Image (cartoon, rainbow, N blue to C red; front, side, top):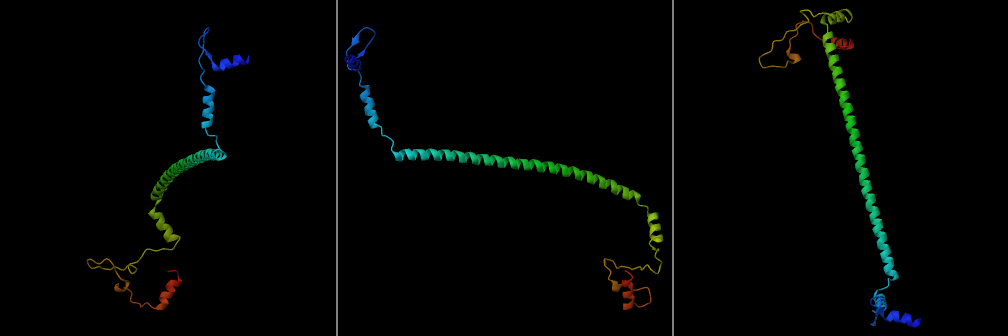
Length: 174
């Protein structure tokens, strides 16, 4: 049996019936030579490759986290923009409503102004009177003048104004 195994390793058959006696290719020797030529990884190279893989994984994880944080930031900003737009629309609607109410109230005030009623209230409730000719002072302006200084206006009354009259006027509430 040992001879048979030996023959199988040294010779090979070519076809189903005939044996061809030729040296079998030395596959085992080639494999052994290739193994010898291949360097076995040392502990240093194994550690380096493990560290390199770890850095690759960490780099990929870091890149993923950066991308995720950018996406979250963009989504938050978009949400704030949408919220601001809604608020602007609501405030614009409120402004239109308030402007319309103001116009209505302004029209009501303009239509409700009754000068006769105002005159009656002023004269009866607040004691106001119409001015007399002595109370009205007419001033003639020269052409081009648009200001009048109090000292330039001549008093129509002949009485002199003193400090006591001024103080009494102030004490009465102007």
